[in-house]
Image (tube, rainbow over the protein chains, first blue to last red):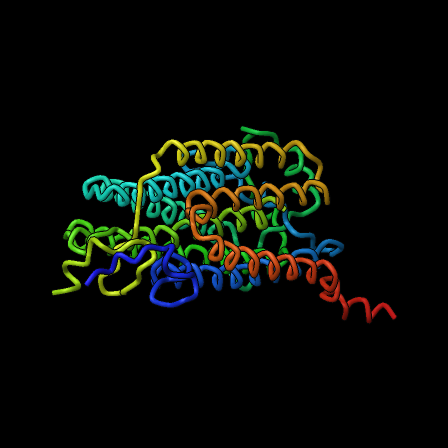
Length: 250
Length: 123
């Protein structure tokens, strides 16, 4: 009995084959990612509505470049958005190592798959550490889920607007005024949701990496699990692109 | 048993879940690294535009456009959607594009409702 029916003898929707030429698992991963994309979009649309409601407000929306101008080991030096760019680069690079792992899986090269997955996991952990540092800084400077010390008094605002790259700055409590609470709460919620996805991605990557080492996929005959997990990881990277565009840039 | 021997006979068109081995071929890593450099370059452009261009609608639209370009690269090349069957590609792209642009349009159209109570009190 032969299963060598080729594609040409089985029409797409005739049954007995996957009409999309992918396995069920991969197809469902795509569908899940689509649904998650809708979730994040709704979150970002909500963010957009709230953020723009503050355009003509007496407590204006803080400028993210002034708020997020910190960098580890460079205390007090004005480096606007540098840390966020570092985080973006880390995530993009981990995406590359992930896709290299997938490509090595296509060649059934177990050692390379394992190597690139380790790089991806390290990249993910690095990103999470950076995000944790960012959160700590923000909380330290007054951001909370229900309050926000991130507006400046008028005098301090003038000082802030005049800051140039590498300038030294030092804000005291006298420079700060209560600002729009949603700035802080949305920061935690939007980056928190994303960070949660990164965390689950790292955990799943670790599980799959252990399975690669164990030889599960060699036995199975294919490394498609690595592909599926790679899809999830790339989605996480894609969401970050839009989160940082909308929260930090726009 | 049958399944064990027909393992290698399966082509991409056959789908028996338990023994399905997807047809995979390595396309090499050149394209992937090229995409990485393009993405890095675009991200740098992103930040340059942020600091150079004046704040406003044009800059915001540019950011969204740049984001979409990055999305095309990430979804098409990194997630290999460009190499998938046409039907699957459209099944993912079309609903996403339709719903997401609809959401954005709704936001722009109705978003000012957020200040409705404030406006009402001006009466």
